[in-house]
Length: 285
Image 1 (cartoon, helix red, strand yellow):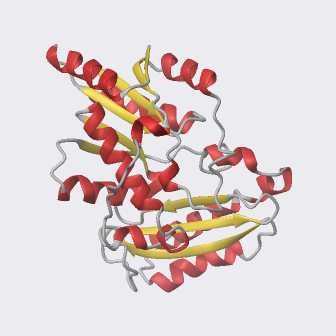
Image 2 (cartoon, one colour):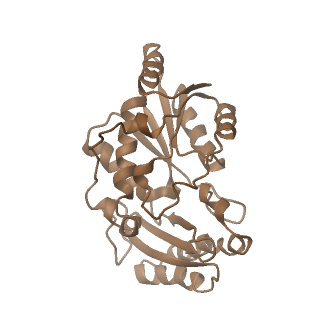
């Protein structure tokens, strides 16, 4: 596996692959790789001849009070894991390479980036859209793979790719979970023992709503209440939001008549860790 730290070096590598008539599947990450990331790499390999991944802890998607400085960075371990999945190249630039001074240009996906997580993290999706567009321009993949756990991110990026005519197919892979249902996340390492024992309720609440949906219920309020009833029993976290929204516009719905996103964000009370999860009753992204 080749480790590439410069934009010209990454472009040269991708051009070499394309010159051979081979396709590229791309998985952008911020590192601290876990089974969720590795599952995305496997999906990319299924769709393309060569796998390229990136590790870049993107400063523009962190708010001033968020965990940029303490975000885990086990780079050597990440390299071993990426190589074990058949990664041909790992793009690992630093912040100065991606945002050389004076940097002034950002990408905003109107409305979609300001809903759900965008309410409490107002600049987050501007940072995500900006860095992903830059990475797609640099790596020039045929396919880019993201996880459903970050559903709002995938919806924002899908809209951006369509609106800006980016010649990349976005693939959304299923959420990978721990044995007790907790969605895998690099932030799970922050959880205290008490929190870790309680946070599986996040998915339990979503499953309660899913079971009600499968029984024929279509009222958004009743589906949301099924999840709320579970969260009200939790002692280690509080829900920041729980919403049922249209899969395309992210606008709240009163009745589920097509694919909808039931999304939740929670904050733990001891380690102040923010966790997100979701299900998609009646469809997919």
